Length: 253
Image (cartoon, rainbow, N blue to C red):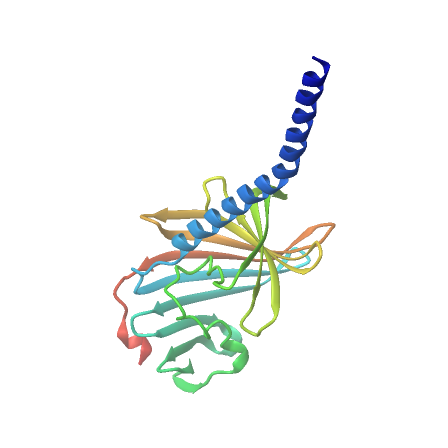
């Protein structure tokens, strides 16, 4: 009788020990599955094969020490079907309105009725604009990412989101670590790119108004985040977003 009880208790201890060893792997697997599902859903939301063109107004306020120091007004056209792009800016310091046009693989600048070669510092963001038909604003999730961990719910001030840590190689070949932030409904609501442990740039997507899966307007807040505080760097409002609307061809002449 004693031997039977002893053997039964011994078997229970063994099974319990095995379950305890398996549990972390099970939790890890479930976490990675959740991370994969969140990213797959976000990529499906961001990548729109039915987008042939996008037009939008972009209003940005630049901050230094939480004080607004500069405002930028930009009108953008992304013509995916013709592989061309226009960015028109109000720049009083350069005589008023300045337009940057990308078409036929070249970038030109139009200012005060003159067409000039565009300065390199003004053409950032044009390269790779037509790699895929992305609904602009949230940008894309890189294809070459590796999931590092599923971190569960994390808090960034008032933003509470499910977090997935990934790594990828950027266009210049440098390794990057980032944290993708998702709402409880599975929508991508922000990202954090580390410059060093617990330091980096936090981007938060706010006040998103959408219809039929397309954003009509949204706000993008960009912060410098360190161990002590989040410092607002810029706030961008995307409005009057038009998808697949007719494009005025004269703007590209």
